[in-house]
Each structure stands twice: as C-alpha cells, then as structure tokens.
Length: 472
Ligand SMILES: Cc1cc2nc3c(=O)[nH]c(=O)nc-3n(C[C@H](O)[C@H](O)[C@H](O)COP(=O)(O)OP(=O)(O)OC[C@H]3O[C@@H](n4cnc5c(N)ncnc54)[C@H](O)[C@@H]3O)c2cc1C
Image (cartoon, rainbow, N blue to C red; front, side, top):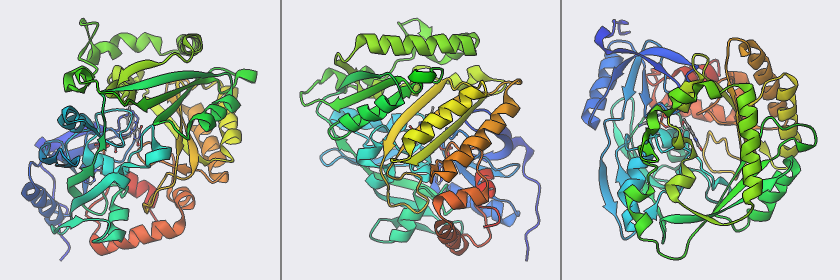
C-alpha cells in the first residue's frame, strides 16, 4: 500500500538555510535525543509518505542539509561524549558533538583531532557525511581516514556498527555519503597526540601565483599544516599574490595552553566587544573598495612581518573563520557564493590563474581566496585527489547576481575540462550530469545501487541529493 502524503505538523515548520545564506527552504524539524527517537521519526515519516534529511549544525554552505517542505532530522541535541580512552586517544561521540566539543574534551589529556575544518561549529555526524578536510589534507587526508568505526541506522531502523573490516564498501560509501545511506548515530575516532597547546607558525609572502606554488613545494615535505591566502584583487604581474602560512607541532610541553579556555578564541575581543555581534558593525566594510584595501593591507602586513616565527594555539590556527562568527550574515541580503575547485597538480597553476583572471575581467572580485593541497582518499564519493584546491568567496549583490551566475558557469566548465573535482559541502552549481562526470559515472552508479539496496523507498533525501543525483 502506498502511504498517503499526510500534512506535517505546522508547529514544526522552520525556514532553514545553507550557511552561505543563499539556498533556503522550509522544513519540518524534529530534534531527537536518542537512537530510539530517531527510529520513531523515520517510522513516522515513512508511514506518512514523507522524506527525511539528517542535519548537523547546518554549516554546509548549500542545500546539503535542506529538504524542501519535508522532514528535517536535526541531530544537534545528541551531543554526549560516550567513551574516552585518554591513554590511546580514542573517543566515541554522539553525532551532534561539535568539533569544538571534541577538542575541548581531549586537549587537557594532550590530544587533538587529526583533521578539522576551518570552523569548529560542524558536528561529527556532518563532518563524516561530508568527509571534511583540513589544512593538513595533503598529509593526513580526510577525517574518514581517522575513523575507527561508526554506528549507522538504516532507513528501516536497523543499527549496525561499521568498520573498514566489517563492511568496507559501506564504510567507504557512508563516509562522504551525504547522509543518504543512513543516519550516523555514533562516531569513534582516533586522535592525534600533542605535546604542546601551541603551534609554531611562519608566514611567507608570495608575490604571484607561481611563487605560491613554489612555497607549497618547498614546505610540503616537512610542514604539519600549510594554507595559502590569495589577494583576489591583485592583477597583472601580481596575479595570485598572497601569503602562505605554515604551522608545526611543538616538541616542548606548554601546559598552560593545554587548558581548553586558554585555547578558545574567547567570546569578547580585548575583553570588550562581543565576538558574535561583530558582523553587524562589519557590514559596511564588505564593499569592493574597502575589501581591495583590506586585501592589500593584509598582504603588506604579512610581507613586512616576514618569516618571524610566532606561537599560536591550535584553535587560533585551525579555526580562522571563527574569529568573526557569522561573518556571512554581513553579506545579507545577497549572501555568499563560493566556488571551490580541486584541480590535479600539473594543471592547477594554469587553471587558478585563469580563474582569477576571468573573475577580474568581469569586475567580480573574490573577497576571500584560500589555497590548499590535497591527496586522494579511498572513499566512494571522494572529492580529494592529488591536487591543489582554490576557493573564491563572492559577495552576492543585486548588481552582480546574474554576472556571478555567468562567471560560475564559466569557471565550472573550465574546471571540468581540466579534470577538477568539487566539494558537495560547498557547491551550489553542479547538476547531475556534471557531477557524474567529475566524480566518475561508475562511482555514482555504485553509490545509487547501494542506496537502492539500503533505502529502496528513497526515505532519505536532500535538496542537494535531488540536484546532483537526479536522473542517474
Ligand atoms: C566557515 C566554514 C568553513 C569551512 N571550512 C571547511 C574546511 O576547511 N574543510 C572542510 O572540509 N569543510 C569546511 N566547511 C564545510 C563543513 O565542514 C561541512 O559542510 C560539514 O559537513 C558541516 O557539518 P554540519 O554538522 O554543519 O553538517 P550539515 O551542514 O548540517 O550537514 C552536512 C551533511 O551531513 C549530513 N548529516 C548531518 N548529520 C548527519 C548524521 N548524523 N548522519 C548522517 N548524515 C548526517 C547532512 O544530511 C548533510 O548532507 C566549512 C564550513 C564553513 C561554514
């Protein structure tokens, strides 16, 4: 019997958006606190003919955790650390535990997460479902490579513990599987031993894009972290100029910085200005002339300070985006669009130069450009390859929205023609045919076959899933 498509309770409706504030959709939100409660929501949705998207903290830029006018399973209340072996650095957490919860729980015992994204807001469930990477991606890969096991609740309500040995196919498909093969209800992760709460950092100035690549080549063999920042306004001979920040673990204990409160960025700047309100006053600064000046000043400051070593805490280095929380709100009403491409090493210099040039030619200037290096990982829907990535963040306004559409289409075609891959936590422009071409049609077919077996009725869905898998 086909279930009726019964109306959902109106008191649960909420307007949700991707982190970048461009894609939005109303959804009916449930916030379970246990596996049993998740089972009930899945059963309720199935019985009433609805689909369900799992949602963590909503830090994906796009439509990954949206499910238009359908059920949204918000897992942020399942936030307990359930086991911690401080001798071996192995932790088990519920899916709503955030990256911040995680490092705060372990740092005093001299451990740190092996892979973290640029903000500490995401949950572990969301981090696994997107298989996040950090500023050490070329050395340590993605977070999935550090997972010992996870519990996966099937759409039918069966709970299994998945390890790389017990079910290698499911392990490598559910990590990075966009939440479409089951709900992750528990994660066991192997952490990285640290001696000190601080990192030693060096900043190197690159006067153009070839120098940026050269600095990565010169540091990648022995750095613990590397990240490049590019001035998106610099052109001509200075195209791609920027700074490379290198950070290394320290060998000497610094017990003071091992305290969670000494790591954190603190709720107030200089003890006065509430950090989470700063975006309100920053709003007027996000214009082309002001950002051109800010990029110039940033570059000059970095070049001037030179390569003097500085000590910063792990949190200060890793979570650059949290210095100004909710900064994307300053970009309202238009919001933010990011294009991030992962281009094979040999082709990256030419493609990145072309991308910056084409954007500037259309008088579209990225306010934030980030450059990283990656290695291939063993996951089915992998986006990392032996490559470099470049992300360009654009402020969407009434005046540039349609030009941005044209630029994004152009950059997508350029990237695809150069064997690039795309990260589904950020992408807002791929269609199904393009996605299949980039990740490989055989991988898409295998993923969809596993989905058909585990979720024959298509209970788990998202706006992103419908966009990039429709018709495959
Ligand atoms: C400022 C900023 C900086 C970022 N920097 C980086 C970076 O450096 N590297 C990087 O890799 N990413 C980065 N990201 C992206 C971010 O790490 C990912 O989008 C991450 O998945 C967000 O986690 P979340 O908990 O918010 O999940 P959501 O965005 O809520 O959901 C993400 C996906 O996970 C699924 N999901 C959520 N919980 C579960 C669960 N329990 N079981 C199954 N599926 C689930 C959802 O259905 C969705 O498909 C950044 C994001 C922001 C906003």
